[in-house]
Length: 296
Image (cartoon, rainbow, N blue to C red; front, side):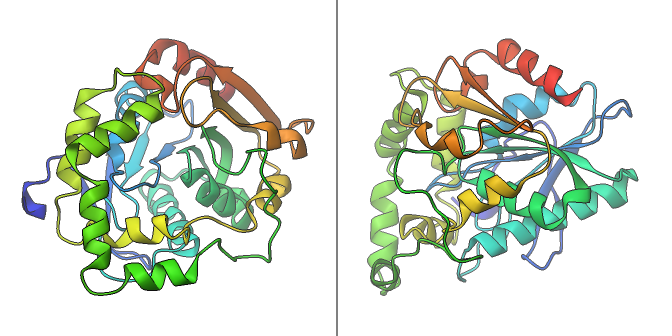
């Protein structure tokens, strides 16, 4: 398949915007002024895209402006051969929020981020706190029982030798092809959902998006840990905005023992939500009911 045949993962077509992080595909819908616009960030993995936030986009477009976008290296956004870093991803978040503010006249937005993108959202909220009102983090990274990450500002967990190996001609592409075989994508989604049943539309979109030109560049940075922030716990501990965290009860993303650094703070709220790492695919009404109270 070619990039031109990649279907929209949402009910609207993307609008391409030029940014310092490269061309980004932005999806927007909805209206309403009772709540600020909501920006949705999908996760980062070998087969990520806005398809991961589709149920939330379609639900909230009925009563507020909702915006989702493909992060650099994913979906319809630019997939050029370049280093993909937390700095690049955070710059993309800033760019989209800036565009939303210009389009709507809103002073600030709410942000919902999934898994690793929670780290980019936290950095953006810390750097420009006046532009992000509230943060919802779904199955965020950075809270496991392993060593806390209080590294030097802006550093990453990149494994240089692995990144160099994956950059060798043919090596990275071969690894990516193995990681994105349809059966392997299904395997990892089963681990994400914590059960044999997965969302079949999400699986189909994941398979298609990994067949696009340049699809391997960002995932190889992810595999070599270059997209993980070494200072993420410092970021989390510095946030002043209200933060709501959804903790999975099944699958690979159930370890939140490291939340002790923030869970006693008045602006943080952790809730165990029954299901895997993407619980809104399993019980959308129950999930959004919890969040609707937080947004208001």
